[in-house]
Length: 567
Image 1 (spheres, one colour):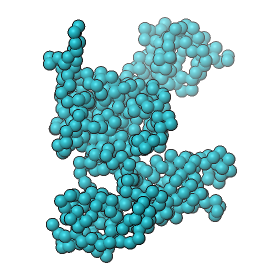
Image 2 (cartoon, rainbow, N blue to C red; image 1 turned 90 degrees about the vertical axis):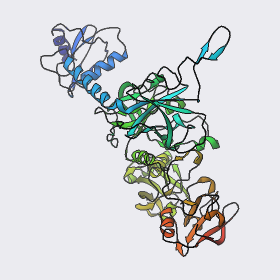
Image 3 (cartoon, rainbow, N blue to C red; image 1 turned 180 degrees about the vertical axis):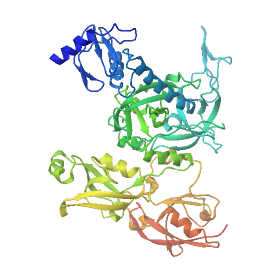
């Protein structure tokens, strides 16, 4: 206490404060700058770090306290001049860092308007409401759309990254089907363009738009792999359509938490809500304390170098209880894979293990903590026969400790870490097996996650060209074609006939969507790559072995042969 009083006394003897000195009321000692304790009472000047002088007064709110404390704690990072007791140099250095970061990134952030085609603003008069032809339409900066958000330029030829929930239902690039939604993008230089969906993935809630605009400035991505709580961040977006003229609005804050969960409607577990679940319900999001209001979906979250480390989304805040919380999809290695896949126009694929995971109860985890070295894990309740997990020697009651070196503390962790892998990837899964009283490292080659919302997938390109009117995929590619209880060995060792063109040779031979092809000639096929490698060298009629299914898709009494003629 004596030291605090002495410091306060010395502070009162400091030179008269300048006009920029902050006024605040602090009732408890805080540490400012390099570990220097300070106590601020009414009308007392305090020193916060090197050369930063603060006046503590009465009646100033939390925002002033936050800004002043931040200024004090950052003084070591942005040194003030020794002859500048006001702290102006420190404040100016912080301000300049923010300005430079925003100036670098804002030409790459766009506003997005979504509305019905041909809608005009409505004019009210005393007798009736009517669409006024003189009022602005969607291609005007003055137009206020019914739905709005932001996007980020990711390629100079007109590709823009945004949230899928913002644009879903709009016209798709390369297709002539009419849409009841129109998208309009306005750039930083105020140019405007109609946009179409180039590729979209409902599981990650990410989409790529396409506009016909050359020589754009793509955003620069930063390293988002090892983000930590407390890192300062900047947000650029289009809150409440304020940035509809193309100039993004900026906000700032810090990373509040990592690996957060998207909000879900309380008690909503019907078929539709389950179909709409995304990987973000497994704990992928960054929580930030920047103000992410309605319209900030699809904006850029920046580090202090002006590099993009996340895509902001207001969806989680809209659905969940905490309306003021901000969330962002991190641009880490896993999601950069998703983004690059969408930029190529392909369907995004996710990993599939084939287990039913459960969280460990408190008694069980306490008894295992010393053995596995952590207070959390996932228990394997069941293993689907012949699944990737079964082939990788996983067993019921295995306790999963980590996946590829990343700790697994819950069932959601296990589903997230496996799900974000691509099909065919090797997963090193460490388990504790009670029956053997040992920790085992298993290698599992993951399959493909069964897609439930296949209507929501937008892919402008196929990974493989259709062969004689046939497009195949992994056997687990679509949930609607899977057996209800188990994966028969024949199904695992096959590929799925995903699409069969009505007028193609495959359709003429009798193939249908949902057929499982086990062999090309005498060559077994278990992945799409194996299938296309087997058929690409064949020119004449080709014999395919197709599994014969018996309802309800649980038994395979045999196979049949189908000959697909050359076109």
